[in-house]
Length: 353
Image 1: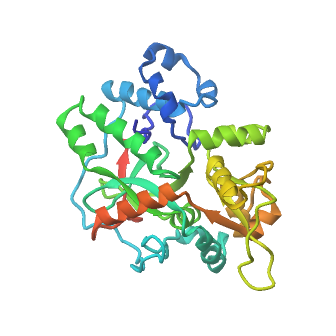
Image 2: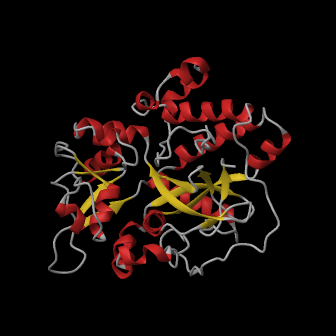
Image 3: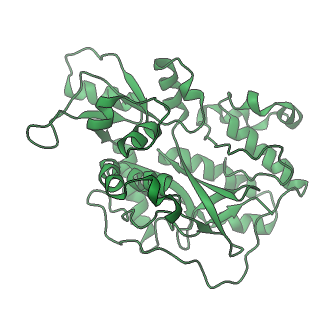
C-alpha cells in the first residue's frame, strides 16, 4: 500500500503530521468500510497500527472527489542541483551523502561533527521509493508547502508500500498507471538518510517550484511493538520514533586502543537476539534496552532532543544491520546500474494544488 498520501486542499490542520508504514500482518484491514474510516478521528487513528491504511484510503476517496491532483509536469531548465561526491561506500557501494544541507540550517549543526557521527550508520541500509528513470524520490507535498520523504529500515516495508500503490493504480486512469509504473525501490544508507533529516535541502517538483523538505525514517511495526513492550511510557506510539535495541552485557572492542567499548545496536529485537545467541550460545538472553534513533543522533551531533537518549549509546554505539537488509541493498545496487540511487534536489510530488 503506498503511504505517500497527499494532503487535501481543505485540510483542517496545517501542523506537520508525519506518517508511519503499516505492517503486512495488518494488511487484511484493507477493505474496511470507508464510512467507518472517515468517521474515525485522526486522534484515534494515530494510535492504530493501520494509520497509513486510513490515510491511503482517504486519499483514494479524495482523489475520486477531485479534492487534489498530481502536480502537473511543466517545462523547465531543471533544478539547481548541489554537487554530490560520486564515490562509493566501502561496504555497500552507496553514494556519499555530502553537500546536501539546506543553507538556512547550516548554523544549527556542526557540519564536521555531522559527517563524523553519520558515518557510524554507513553500513546500515535505508530504502526509498524513487522513479526508475533517474532516481527521483516520491514525496508528499502538503498544502503548507512542505514536502515529506520517507526512508524505510527494511526493503520489505518499502516493497509493501509500492506493491499496493501499483495495485491500486491499476484500477485508475492511464496517467495514474504510468505514474506508478515507473516507481521502484532504491537502496542508500542510513548515513545518507540521517544527513538528509538534518540538512533538509529544498527539492524541485514537477511544476518547477522548489519546496522545503522533511525526511522521515520508518521502522517496522514489529520493531515499534517490541519497543513499546520495553519502554511503556508511550514513547514508541509517537510518530517519527525509530527504536534501536541493545543489551548492556553485549559489548565489542573499542574503536581505538584504550577507548571505551562499543555497544552494538539493532533495528530489530530479533536480530539482536540472533547475534547474542551466535556469540554467547551458552548464556541466557539478557534484558533488552531500547533508545530512539532520532533523539540519539540529535544528541550525537549536539542538537536538542526530547530526552529519550542514553549517554553510553550516544558516545559508543555500533550500528549492526541485518544480513537480509544488506543482501537486499546489494541487489538494489546491482539493478540500478548507472542511475542515481537518490536525487536530493528533485522530487516527484504527490498532492497539493
